[in-house]
Image (tube, rainbow, N blue to C red; front, side):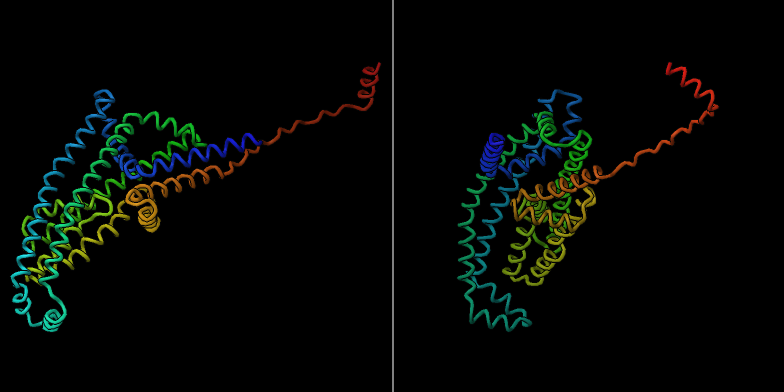
Length: 364
């Protein structure tokens, strides 16, 4: 008994330290797992036509090329647009053009008086421009960190794709479930991950299209480019399309286009932003069989507990819990025993004298 307790304690200590060493890479491993599950049908199709290693390398090459090239072009254009916006902001506020734009609209007379008496917009604009300039360098440094995380994601993705059979066999050997129960649980988790990834992609496309549409309607330049940027930002955890349409609204207001700036802000808050919070749980919940409220708790709770990786971990845990509940329900069903009627054998009546004579013979 003491040896068993000591072994259990050593096992818990080892698992704890393994978990602590895994936490820094939890986000990268989560996204690598999500990509591996999302690309699983593609890998199955490729492995029927080429060796498994070649299929894995082809998937990773296509992923790197498909993400890095557009990302580099859009990132360079985004930095240039930020620098241009900084220059325009400084020139507009330094030249005092905002005063004429404000004075041309008498319906905000109280705002004009308060602005002139309480605020120095020129100074605020210079401070804002300086803040934008100082933020570029930390952003680039953070980009280097994101690149290192991307490298870890690619490394983990390679092993998830290449050693899929070993990983599944190891999970099967550790789980106290039957083969059918493990297959059902695996199918449920795979459906959850695919729905999460594909749902995020669809929501990103919808938000980008809506953002590009309002940019084109109000006359902002490069509406197609900024719509594409909003799609990419919507795919990333924590980021979102608001990183584009909020600065665009502020830019229009600073330039004196108050009505267009307000239109962009209202469109963003009322149309673009709710798409992620309302449509995403509905789309994903229908595919994985979870109630929208449960899925909302999974997304928000996972995001709070695990950070950006919780967008995948939260729904997966909810799906696993639902799958285990199904296992318990199936095991608790008592199959009624089949009652087999007994065959009635008719008794044979034997005369008493013959029976006594027979028993006497046997006793002799």
